[in-house]
Image (tube, rainbow, N blue to C red; front, side, top):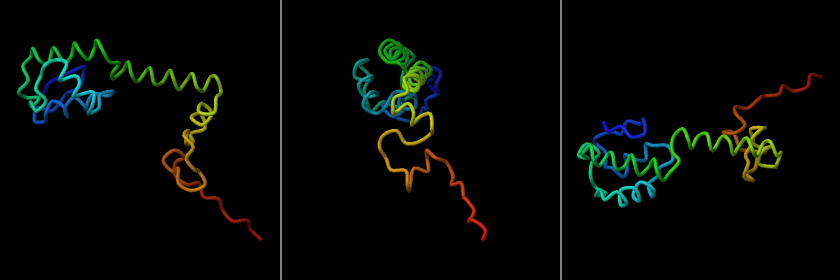
Length: 122
């Protein structure tokens, strides 16, 4: 198993898909990384040499915020939105959808399980 930025990447996967295990690297960015480092796209992670893994590691560290750095940046951005009390910040604070989705029905992912309210006794 190759280890890049503290993440174990399975040997049996192709390099372009293995890199997507790293938080902050998707399919497009993985292909760009392989092209920039001169590694063939179809190469399996297990077939990569230590030099190639070192190239990938150095390129990613130099050019992209990933893993812990990216997570902290996202947290700082959310905190900023909440501090300035903009609409998106308030929605994040209340745990509701922030991008205009309806909440009368659906939105269960953000709102959590239903809180059933009993009928009024007569």
